[in-house]
Structures are given as structure tokens and as C-alpha cells.
Length: 172
Figure 1 (cartoon, rainbow, N blue to C red):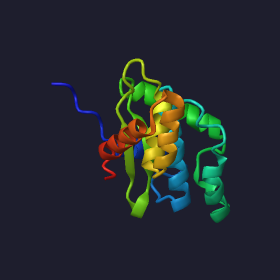
Figure 2: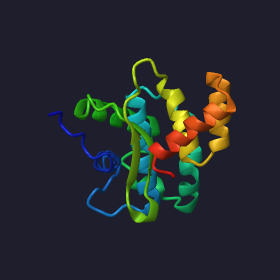
Figure 3: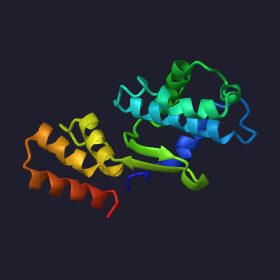
Figure 4: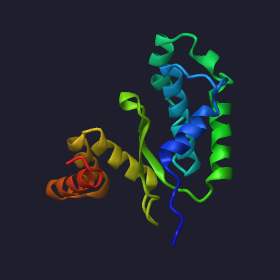
């Protein structure tokens, strides 16, 4: 019987905590969110979903504005170095885990990670993540247009595919 994958929320917590200066202390909400975001970026980058680093300042900018001392809670303020460390950690500790993280956050104070299985052979993982992300965030019309533009589907075919993804993601 194949080994069950580790619980993704536990892995993300473990990776996020690696970035914090004092792991024995409770991190501020802002630091916890940013550390988790960086762990998410590192994980997806390690499974071949690049491009997440570019333009991600918009994610931690509001947390930084809320808590100007945010980076004091981290071991470093070198974001690229921290992500590189987490990519190495993931590759060393979970080399065969190719799941892709769709969403990762702390809604209602509880860590929640939604992930997709590895992309099937021949499937563009980045394209698939974009499609699933559009459906997950409720942008169904944009997802339908995306399928029409990138796969040449009719509106009805695209709508059917989007509805199937919504069911798969347990959104319906």
C-alpha cells in the first residue's frame, strides 16, 4: 500500500516556523501570515511552478503596514534567501511529494491548505493552477473565458468544465 502523504497543513506550519527568529514564542498574526505565504511560494516553486516571487510584495505589504516591526520576528529580511532555504528543505525532506498548493492561509485562526495532485503527464501545471485558481476564487466567468481562449472550447464546453472543477473543489 502506498504511503499516505503528510498532512500539507503540518508541513506548511513546519516550513513557516523555520523562518521565525523565536519559534518558542507565538508569532504576531502578520508574521504568521507572511511566513506561511513564503512557505507556500517555496513549495510551489520546488514543484516547478515558478514566477511566484515576482510581484509578491503586494501580499506582505499590508501586513508590514499593520506591523512595521514585522521583519524583527524573522531570522532574516532577505526574502529570496529565506525562500531558497525553504525550497532546499522541501527537496531534502519531501522530494517525492509533487502536490501543488492552490490556497494556503489562516482563516478564522486555523491553518488551511488546499492542494492539487501533481499535474498529469502532458498537462501544463501552471495553466492548470491558473484555471483552478480562477474557479477557487469565484471568478467563474474568467475561468470560462480562459478555457475558451487557451483551449478553443465553446462557451458551453468551458462552462461544463468549470462546473466540474467547482464540484471537485467542493465549492458547489
